[in-house]
Length: 164
Image (cartoon, rainbow, N blue to C red; front, side):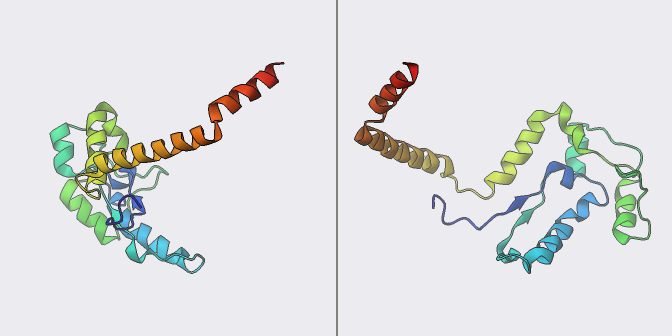
């Protein structure tokens, strides 16, 4: 294994899952619960699963001047459930407004930076050089194998026969 020191990592939430909307902020908990629900029917349990919520937050939205939508109606047309405490907490903190993930369309550099930073938290500093070294080694092994079986000559012979 190239990076044996890494913890098993199964999922990074998508940007859509991390936008500041009342339900968007609850997705990490729901996702983990869903994995436990299916654990009985699989040979895997999410005991070492890391769900790393990354994406937009209030400060980033303000800094990037992203567009707020002045309602909390879901994509399916439902209004927020005001009986839920997390919805009331959200409204108290941000008001009855939200930012959709497509707000990042105007800032692809920011989207790329968010994803890269989230991934880099799980890689050692020398990850890229280790990867390049391992890749070079494997490419050498493939080249040796190709030479051993005379792959290029054999392919040329096959192509010649097909062209006849």
